[in-house]
Image (tube, rainbow, N blue to C red; front, side):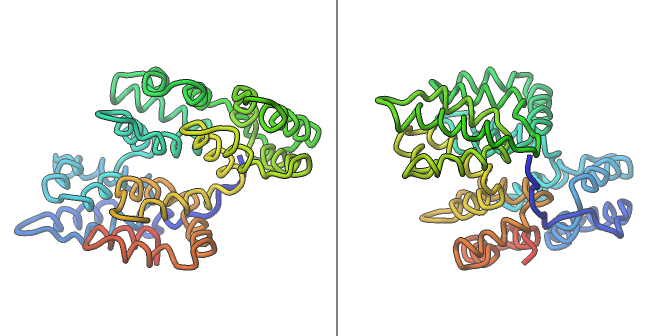
Length: 318
């Protein structure tokens, strides 16, 4: 898989889990809660360091830090604090379960996770899902989806995409022709053939395929997919194409989509910022400015409020 960009959060050089645990306990003691003290610690520690804090807090005080925070906090600020304290694979597993539970399925949230994670990350998510919910992720995805979109989800679940950085130009040309023949060049669309290419090739190989497609068609690969497919499958194919081209730009768009229009999609906003903070959020921030002409932090300031806003701004690193 291609280089994933630059994060905004990294390991804190002066990390002292004992001091952090003491400060967190103090922030929750007595009347009221010092949310700023909680933000100042959790937004500036890596996930691995936060896991150390969780264990040391329980060892030191005999109390579960997550339960203590849940009893003290509320609303969207609580949601982002708990997301930061979850292990990444567990947070993704929890997000997938939430996207499939209850009335309706949040296909875009499922796509965002399943189409952007590395093979190892998908394997870790499947394990976390089974451990936490005593359910099989692949079976749940199959029961919540249908048609070729279901096949795409099954493919993603195999965690077997080629991740080699090397590019085979001959294969790129052959794949571009296969996609063209499966879509634009025929009556009706052979979605299986398009899926075969998009679900198995490395992102570097796919970029070469998209370039080869430009040479044989008057349409870009995105325009071809939009004209040949629809609904969830179209969204799925476009998510893979977007990530293959530029993963940070894909997440910049997801973050903007979460804040655009009436009401904020807070779970989407939290998930994108928390899950990419240590991977490519810094690069996504630059892409956001390039694409929309306004800093990501300014959008967040205009769209959120209170301690929730302060935490997101801290993670984005204004």
